[in-house]
Image (cartoon, rainbow, N blue to C red):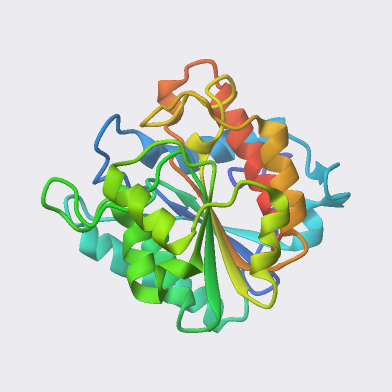
Length: 278
């Protein structure tokens, strides 16, 4: 038998089995409703490959990935051309994770996958709020005649739990009706002090990586000027550590769009820091 050692194909710092874990890294390689540039389905695999280039230790939180007992479950396998079935597969697997007393760290894939993840978590928690970091509102009731799209994921979630239970950070693009929803329900947060609205809530965190500035995150399907610096995002995450984060996902990296690899490297570090919140 070969003795190795061999490079691991899992995200850096993961444990060897599901039962010993407290957090499950779940790849969701789906981009079937992307309306601009596709390629987010390649993100989970490439993130794992590039994760070997980061440390398991987070200086921001003074903790290591190993402290979180994260299990990398691999990527779910999805049928082509059937978004509803894709969402069902995600929901079934996330349900199993929470039935086992664990939390999920979803890695997309496009932002629509968040709807399935959150729908599963709703069965285990009440008093829920979703905090979204994103360049885009994602509040379209439909897009090109379709209800299930990455552009409408927050509309679907808001319709289920009430738009007052959505909080949004970093938004800088959307249609007028979407901004009307945000104004009506005061969904936007502009300062970290406003996170006090999360006190006493069970919080699901979703990060669309296009919230970040293009200098560190050009590898996204829909680029928007004027994004958040990486260190500013870290500041928000550090503040979020004061609240009860019951699950999270990181979505919308399209690694092949940025051949420099900077976007993928940044995504790996974002995932590490989000893991510290779980």
